[in-house]
Length: 96
Image (cartoon, rainbow, N blue to C red; front, side, top):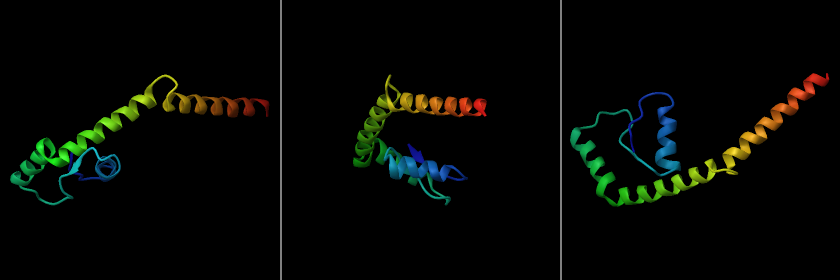
């Protein structure tokens, strides 16, 4: 993923994609960029060493997401816990 943030949450998204998850490259920060520079970044992403590292990171992120979304994964456990806490609060208000 090539990131070119312009407004609001796009900068946060770019930070997650580029710095935290390491599954993309920053194109530039709100400055003009030439078509040659864009082509160079695309080339780096598709055939360069950076691209190889990013593809490995993508596989790791994919695996983490699949585990979280699987039955008994962290997403299911967290939503179940949230529902239980919410039901507990509702039951508590009904007793009052």
